[in-house]
Image 1 (tube, rainbow, N blue to C red):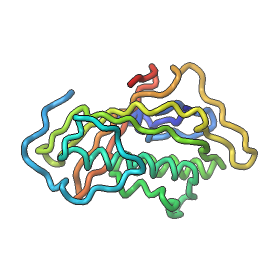
Image 2: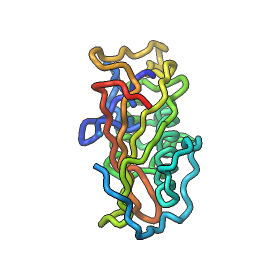
Image 3: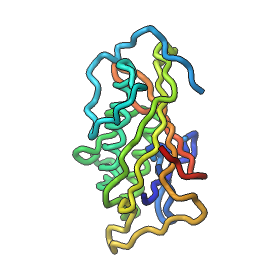
Image 4: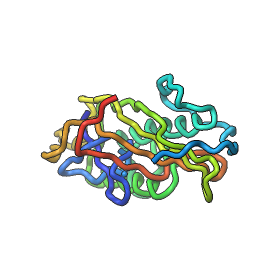
Length: 209
């Protein structure tokens, strides 16, 4: 899978990735405790993901809305990267990742896609498909219920960053292990819905399911 790169703020990774020498840092793509027995309103409508997560006994009914929010965030982020908006312009149809995210990742990703636009770059091809597992869930956490997910996306050899003016593919930086890379995503329940708040990725080694 051609690389996407994450902003190093506490993210080294969202939705799997390696950097491109002419591109901006991509924030999407930086311990386990038992889930609390207290229920959170996550019974409220969950966002519809672009694809259903693989069947897994780890998707407890109380945690699945968080998984769905992550999948929806990933799908929207890919659309925004394919059609990056100019600064101040609305996100493209199907690419409004802000619905499924909170700061800091929301602001970081918005900065990334607008920088793509300013540099006359975008992504094309078939993006990776998430392969998600639940690392931990604390539905009684204060101030926000929290779920932490791991994602080892499918390889996506056609997913590439390119120059929209010339069509030339941006050259990846050398030295990284072959993708896909393990993404760790933290989701919180806030304002009556789940959303991604932080992501990190480990580009030091290839992840395997």
